[in-house]
Every structure is written in C-alpha cells, then in structure tokens.
Length: 251
Image (tube, rainbow, N blue to C red; front, side, top):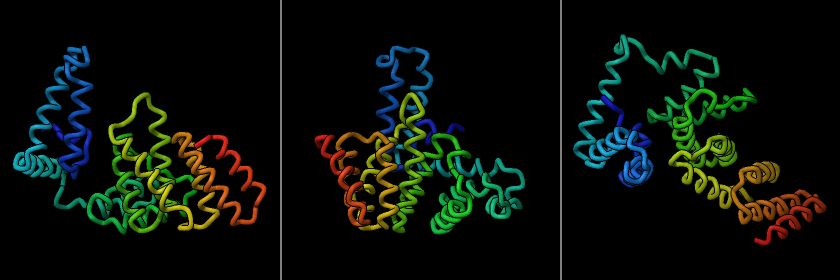
C-alpha cells in the first residue's frame, strides 16, 4: 500500500488546507502539459490518487485505519517489542534523537521537549538533523519548535529553526513547507525575543538571524534590536555601530 501522505509531502495530521496546497504545488511540477516531461506521468497520477483519497474525509479515515494497521503488523513481535522502551534504555545520540521525535508524535510533547533540552545541555554538538531525512527533520523539527514556543522556550526554538533554514539553503530547491518555517521564525524574532529573553541571549539570536538571509528589511530590524540590546548592556559604542548599519540598509 502506498503512503499517500508521503506522496503529497504532508504530515499524517495535515489539515485539508495543507493537503490542497501541497496538491496544487505538486500538480504544477508534475502535470505532463505543464512540466513538458511525459516521464513524470506516473508520479502525477500517484499525486492525483493521493489527493482524491486524503481530501475526502471518509476515504481518508479508511486509508488511515488500513495503512497504519499494516505498518504496525509489519513489525516482528509487535506484541512483545516496545520501541519506546527500547529507545529509552539506550544512551547513544541517535536513539535519543529518535526518542524525541517518537514521543513528539505520540502525544508526549512534554517529554519530547524535556529530552531535547537535556540533550542540548549535555551535548554541545547535539543535532537532530544528523539522524533524519530532510523531510522528516523539517516536519518534526517544525512541530518541536511549535511546542518549544508554546512553553516559552523561544531561544531553543530559534536554534532549531535556524538548523532547518540552513539545511534548506544547502539544496537546489526548497521543501514545500519552507515558507511556513520562514514565517514562523520571523514571527518569533519580531514578537518573542526583545524584552522576553535575556539581553545576552537576544543578541545571540539576532546575530544568528543576520546569517539567515531573510532580507534587508528584516536585517535592519535585527540590527536595530541589537543596538537596543547593546545600549541596555552599557556598550554604547557597539550600539551606535549597529544603529548606523541598520540605517544604511535604508529600511
């Protein structure tokens, strides 16, 4: 049985709006009349089939029950093997990274966030993206960032989103949900950093933001905020430099 969610490039809990948006993007890329590539016909038909099922509430429900039960049965000794316990008993970084996403996807968000923060604190070079595909890291990383924001962990959310954005810049094309990642990141930077986290952490965040190529207008905003942070910290000369650099951008 084909994974229709994977074919459309959406999460299994995707909304109807997300499914429709993904379908439209896929059609633009794969439709034989638009792409000029007849070899993509099979992929196009798969996308159409996936959309017909997932856009219909009843068919989607039937698919979900059949597909996910088949996955469960595919594991040997499914009745005796507990993947969660197996991951929890292991100390290597790969297992801990997979435990974070496993708990996140099984309604154990508090545990996922706590484990993520623990690994970051105890392992300076810990990175989730090392252990997952590009698509999984963006999807699950985005969800984890949302949970961090809900708990007021804005600095950690930005560090995670920075990894996702930098990863995307290394590819020749952007993943379909990348614009949402950018919008989410900018919203945090504009509304949840200044006067919310410490001045030192805020400076680190805005310096990182300058490396994300988010446009002159946003860079001017980051520099202006850095100027304010340095001013509060008593470093007036650096505050003035940041302010001048912000004004040079003319935004």
